[in-house]
Image (cartoon, rainbow, N blue to C red; front, side):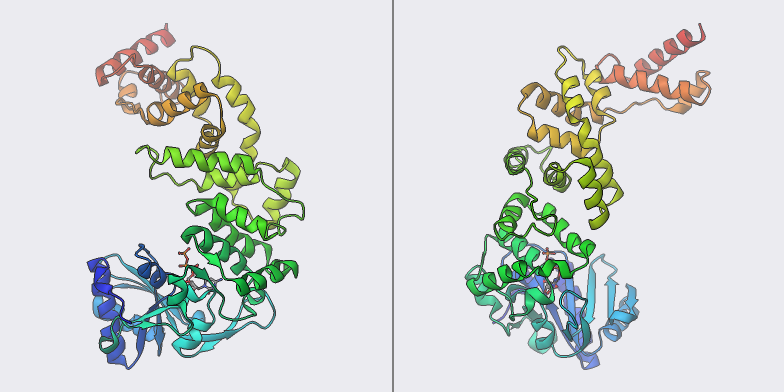
Length: 421
Ligand code: CTP
């Protein structure tokens, strides 16, 4: 079967042609592989351009870099290279390889091989598809393991019995892909997956590596569905045997996100930070500390989670009657944005939601026209006073009391007068 590559963006199409021609010149065979092929066949867009080479990936990438003046990064120890073409497209090159896992959950030992071997070491049949790039075979689908049929039948299937034991992060990937595409995990695969969970396979992977794959769930369009799926498989036990997130809050967030996505202002927002907070919100401070240490939360994640205790106080301040926009701004400006979104999506108080929207859509975007330089021109000395004056002018602008550059200058001058007087 031929895959229609001409439907790709023109820049990518040309780069892929170049890769195929160059591979041919060197006596190699190059293939587009992995998730990008799956997405292409599903008519979805993808941005990870992975090339597998029967031959030497580094040599191919180096030759392409020399001929096309593109930027090359070589990872000798892995036999891989990344090439950034002059048109900005980035491709990852690796030599076709086979691998085996010396122990369950460990990193694999690899050696070079054929495309067929390379595809066999992958997680699911739908991700084990390739498209030939050499001129004579251009566009030909390479499907050794029935991935195309599985795509059509919406099935997630492993390539061999040991798959989840070799790499238990695939349990998480199964949940992610099943939810993302609305696919079913095929019966035998599901049996293997559940057996791996019962056999504590996730514990054979270093906790931060397992969590790095888990974190990707929060970036999916509907993380709640992935998480539910995992929980049904008893797949959240790696956090703690008794761990359950607050499903109600996750469901409310999913519903709210669906609603907010219709609003052009929120359309492009990345909701992963909010889902992260919703997932972990159940834990008390002590357990959060433990999880942060075990799973290597980022500093920002820790900071955000610890900010959650402030939510009742923030909400109490936001229900004070007759607050000016600037008063709302003063409450919300110091708060982490993801926490604000979390409150927005979980509150049942419409006044809080309204005030948050006003802050996000209007007050937060107000900019002053005057600068510190203008104030120095008015005789302000650099330092705290100058900052404070700018802040007061900003609050007045948020309340609509000043508008133009001149208004701002007049107000700043009067404040100077007050402070001197
Ligand atoms: N892969 C695998 N086992 C893993 C991780 C990755 O076999 N544990 C293989 C799959 O063939 C996958 C490819 O490596 O398609 C690239 O990995 P990644 O970028 O993580 O997956 P994608 O399928 O591209 O997923 P996404 O669309 O979420 O980026």
